[in-house]
Length: 452
Ligand SMILES: [Zn+2]
Image 1: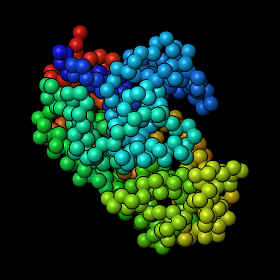
Image 2 (image 1 turned 45 degrees about the vertical axis):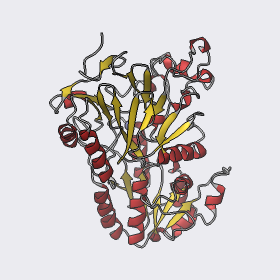
Image 3 (image 1 turned 90 degrees about the vertical axis):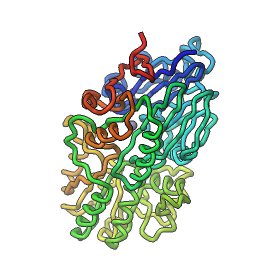
Image 4 (image 1 turned 180 degrees about the vertical axis):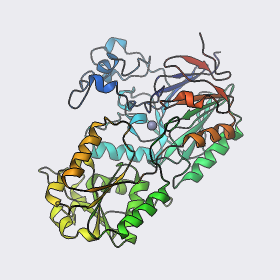
């Protein structure tokens, strides 16, 4: 009987792209499967230069943008290398949350392998694939996790706990192996509206006396970016909207529904209506009915309207949402009454809206990672052209470095594996044995040592 081991095929010295294999005797599961936010990807594929739809896995393997994993890939995804197909060798894939860097490669997974995730994450993935023609996750037996309710996979016992992150319904995991517990945080934070969930998860993790803690460290190391709490974002918006006489513009991540809720409440309390893209309205509708996450509903809430873009073809999913929608002309006319949520990709609408010079634009998402960020340069060009006044109000989806250190002390795991970070060295002096993983190497859960 082989002892429990961990192997990291992504999320190693990079943000995102977690691909973590946990094996214990005959049982083998994968945690998360998505692309990293990897500059290397853009060395080979950029804009419309993409892996071919007939051989996506082969075209990514060519440049080591995807690892080869025996018994994981779907036969249909292995165009051009069908001979490498083997029967499924995984009992399950567990998906921590609905961001691309954790779920984006599920479409390559053998359809016979079950995918476990929270009900809310599943709803977001379904909404994504309805409104985003390129967002597909493949056909799988989908198994829905219930908070705190253990799942048996062979001899492994997996306990899912909801955690707070910048997309709702994120999950952290405690896995009971034959030699003690492994804790996998997924992506999480302690300063959001559902921080209490993160607390419950960490307390449950500590109670296991875990052998290994797999801790995401997006914000570990140098972190010059400004970060507010969600309440801080709200307060900053309140001040800005109170001082603004005309239209106000804002951008945020499309699935950060906490932020959309904050924007909606700030708009309502300043006598405005939040105007959202049809995609956002569709997601709000898809997540309707959770008493713990009350979201304004299009067509129902008096302070929520849908923006109708200028376009030739309407999708079936958006048609019902456009009843009563507002276009550029109405936004221009009713400026003072509105807060318009506008994605960068919809900026050409500004040509019709013609905002007054000095109109505030709130960038309610992460500041760019680098000075050379092309999208940031483009954004600045648009802001400059229309003489919009930029503001940066954002609450990150991730814990700060000091919070991560405190969490290591609190959970008290024997071995600490820093993942989902560009700065694993920042964890060096944190409590627990420092085990920075190398890509593709197998580690003992019990000691954190590499198997040779
Ligand atoms: Zn991530």
